[in-house]
Amino acid sequence: MSKKSFLIKSLVPLSIAGLLLTGCSGGSGNTGDSSAQARDTLRVNWGGFPETWEPGSQAMEPGYMRVPYETLVLREKDGTILPNLATEWEFGDGGKSLTLTLREGVTFHDGTAFNAAAVKTNVEYVRDVVGGQFGGPLSSGVESVEAIDETHVAFVFSRPFSTFLDLLSQRNLPMASPAAIADGSIKTAPVGTSPWAYDPEKSIDGTKMSFVEYADYWGEKPGFPNIELFGIADDTAATAALLSGDLDITDTELDEFPRLESAGNVETFDYPAIRVNLNFFDRGEGGLFADQQVREALCYAIDGDVIASLSEDRVGETQHFTEGESGHNPDIVGYNGNLKKATEIWAELGNPAITAQIGAAPFNKQEITVRAEQMSQLPNVNITVQELTAPQYFSTWNNGSYALGVGNNAQITPADWYGSWFSENAPLNSSKVVSEQLSGLAGKALGSTGTPAAEANWQAVMKEISDEALACSHSINMETIAYNTDTVADVQPASQVWEQNLIDYAAVKPAQ
Image 1 (tube, rainbow, N blue to C red):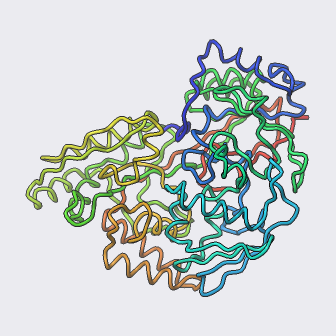
Image 2 (image 1 turned 120 degrees about the vertical axis):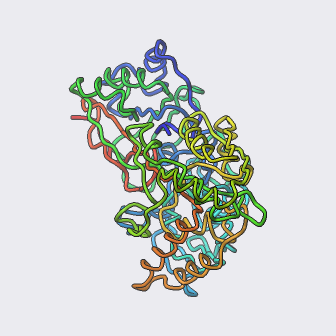
Image 3 (image 1 turned 30 degrees about the horizontal axis):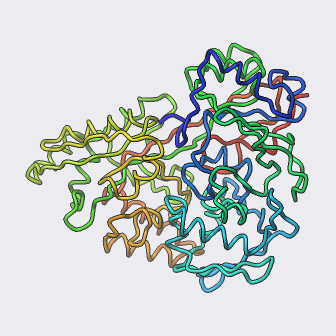
């Protein structure tokens, strides 16, 4: 899967990319004038633009979301939760309720006050309207939200939800203006609380989105008062713009490294950004994948080494959580390219006939096709690929429309991964089926929250998910960021984990 995934590309041809950059600077000056532009505007290319700016939408990548929007809390890589729009928090009722104290004096870019009522509006909108991978956990876990007063909001959960603060730091719930949500404009024009407010007058549809300094921002001023996001999907064109100083930062691919490394004015860094795996959705009674042995055979038929070899920035894994993360279980060996064992299991089952479709978008069609072909090596198995547009893929791959699917599993805690995909009430478990063994282990893990036994209990849950072959063919995709050292300094990864197309925007400064 390309790093430029999960969004619609603006296909800017190489021959006109330079014209678009040099002629689209709006009120910030000529984009081609690097010395003038570098003083106040950070120019970033992530290769396209989101389909929607709705909070909680899985069609809005973090690299875009984190420009206009802020989250209630922040999370460091070690799991430490830091205040942001919420300054204090307190769990109650054994983790079944939470009260947040909100920061005072914060306003949205349209002047609307940020308060408890705004938080309630956002939660209910993402939970009840947006849904999907990021809104789903709110639906399954948040029973009610109460605005106690201007600065205090209370959540009541349907289960112990001690990882809710982790969720609040991620893509699930950026804070958007209640007024923009109410009139529907939030879909096309983001309105958040960040240092940068969207300016449609300085933007050019399909080419550039301009974000200008928000004078009433509550926090410290960032290194750049303005940001321009560009949509150059062609990596060769993006590299040319970066080397010339027309861009400051872009994501890039390994094919561009020879040009970048020889330039002398570009540095790069990479980080793990996307977790991908195969999920079996039709596993309810009478479903195609209700039999655990069927799932096991299909998982063994997929060769993870072949999948990883499709791109140099992809790494095969045995499980969802990597070494050092909570939930990682070293005893999980996974299912990796053992066609002989897959064939033996299939023969024991009587070589049953399985015919199913799996959805794929342009950005992941190759790897999904390879998985489908490998599973179809088994007798009487015919897994075909249904080509979808990116919007179709986002809305259908994990909603039960297809019996199985491959996509991004972005959850960062074992409780949330289990709660999003595998529990009986999981929003992404369309079968609504969970084994007694898995449910019992998860219940034990949830009940041990905050105790020394919790980690071992969640490791047991992760192993059971693997043993039941509910998910397999895991891989990690790396994100590579390149930046022009003549124009910018202090370009670094953000504190967020498992988010693609992302830098610490506030930390970036003009080069001296």
